[in-house]
Image 1 (cartoon, rainbow, N blue to C red):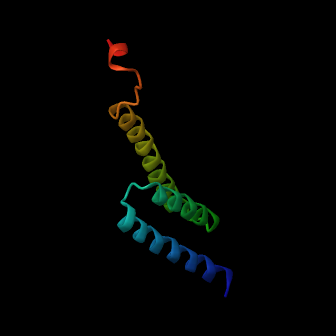
Image 2 (image 1 turned 90 degrees about the vertical axis):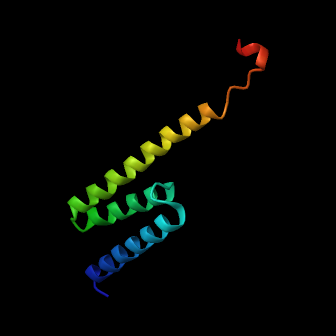
Image 3 (image 1 turned 135 degrees about the horizontal axis):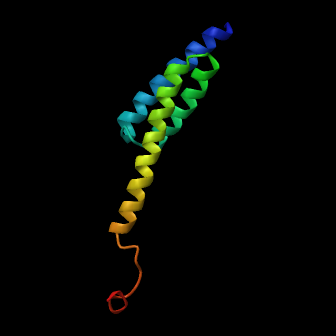
Length: 88
């Protein structure tokens, strides 16, 4: 196979993987963010800069939202381990 055909095949596999991960884990899963980042690297290597930036942007958004969700969820779950009397 030529180098271009290998890149085309890799792109197809990334897109297929993204669809499956989104269906299995949801659109904002960390696995999706990782695949988006890896796909962006491939896109940069074939000079598809616009699409690469879109993938990177989406991955960053997922990571930022997940970081916020984890922080808020920890606060809501009562990670405060003080006893009832100590909270007053």
